[in-house]
Amino acid sequence: MTQATLADRSVLLLHPTGNAFVRHAVLALSQAGALAGYHTTIAWHPGSALDRLLPDGLRSELARRSYPGIAANLLHSHPWREALRLLANRRGWSRLTRLETGAFCFDAICASLDGEVARTLSRGARPDAVYAYDDCATQVFATARQRGIRCLYRSEEHTSELQSL
Image (cartoon, rainbow, N blue to C red; front, side, top):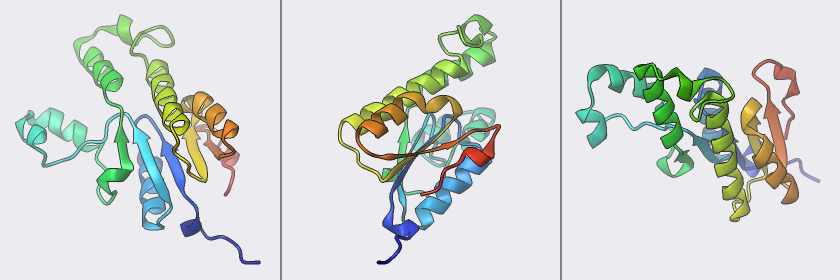
């Protein structure tokens, strides 16, 4: 019996902001041919028509949310709530972003992304595993378990909780 390699697996990854660790994980999975898709709030495309119209400050802020080296068909962006959160923060509308209660607080952004990816799985996406972080794993993991898809969890606080394929 031969052991499966990473290239024999497909992993769907989700994270709201794409921090440095996530960006490297997405790139590594992609380079290994094991990335089924990456869901995030904002996946920016530098050089696009919209990018050229934006002021330099906003353009550089959004460029931190770009994913060079990742095929466009593997990037799935769910931007509206996060865009409104960023706008509310810039305008000082703190009531909208208040922790746990604001319509556009980080918890609401995570719950929304979690639900969107869970619906993707419900509609038939069939990766071998779903890899999620902290507040974005509740709904997607429940849906994945119902469909027999392995769940990989990485807590931002406890990296030892990552389960291997």
